Image (cartoon, rainbow, N blue to C red; front, top):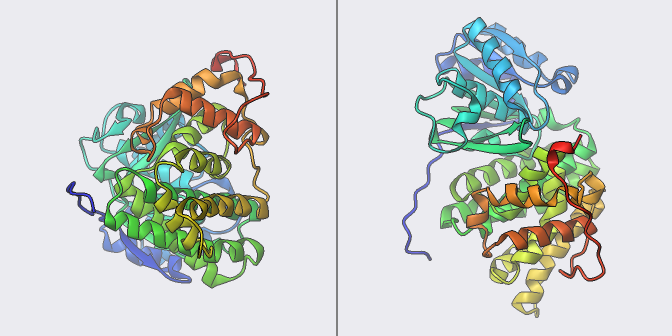
Length: 408
């Protein structure tokens, strides 16, 4: 055990249960709110997931307004428009209903309700001076864990860069996990968000900043995802598996809120900023290649992960057992029709210099289990582009490079 001091802090109250979102109004009323801004996207609204939540607000005489302009990889412009709407309506609480993008947007709007300037001014750690208004999160996907984290990720469209804002102030006051809201998710979203949660748990478990508490949360999250993601994907209506995935995702979020992440997220945030790729798919496609890169640095931890994912490692060496973890991730991607390379996601190596530079700007690189240099990031990206897991680029032609400013 490390002699470095650590602490565990997660002030978010978490409520879990089938149909619990129908009591949202009661929970929010207890926070002292009177006027609520619901932050969501048009897909959630079209799926009628808001109807019972809205009724619960009306039942306890809570006024509310809707802001449904959230997009994937939310931009600073979206935050600005939402903050304007919140100010006009004089909301004193923000309710996020949706996936990670809606929750991240709600967090940023709540921050800007009490802080000057642009959300882009607060990228990094601990820059928020004033506590935001209360944030309530109701996730409709089992993936990001953002409902219990101290961060929000926003895209600067002008520079095609995704920046993270981290502060103890960013934790939501309340998270409501209702598996009934996830029963009708399309298979593709179940897959991408489920693998997002798995990536969070794996990177948290292997992070240099991990501690016994974050690792306990992470390894149990990995085990739950291994047991329940397949059912959630292929059956869909298995409410127990859906609830287990929500809890596993939340646990992974609670884990990486303490430990942060690693090279998968350093690179995937960059891919999202440049190519607007869905975050979960970027993570899933990159994960085997980063695990291969990290294998030499933490084989014992990968052995633990292999076991958590249901592998029998009896009689195997530590390295052979660790390889099983990578094989399991690849099999999960194959079974859920997730691309086995990032080329199929729309990545182009024409922008490799920017991809490497922006990835290295991430603090996650510093806590990745294996020491990482710019040339390592380039190799990971190139290997992931070609779907090349043997870590050899022999015979592969790297495309000409040009500025990302010409990318459309």
